[in-house]
Amino acid sequence: MTTPLTQASSRSAPDLPIIKIISEEEELFVKLNLEMEDKTHKMLVKWGKEVASDEDYISIAIRAGLEEYVDALDNKR
Image (cartoon, rainbow, N blue to C red; front, top):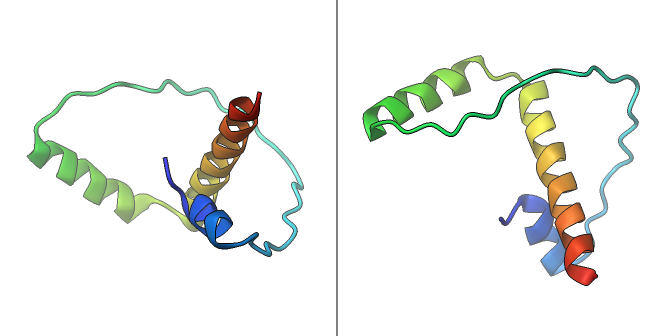
């Protein structure tokens, strides 16, 4: 998986600002593996984009960056 973090890292080390965690909440969720028609998929993506907040996008980016970092550490072993 290539994320903007990977793309930036491959060019040069990105100068990211400090991100301070001020609190945390534990959430229970289930990741579903779904099968659906393309039309249904497009509809759900559209709806999701309509309700997603900036915080949702930040969470996605941080999770992807952390997963990428852990994968890179595992590959070095």
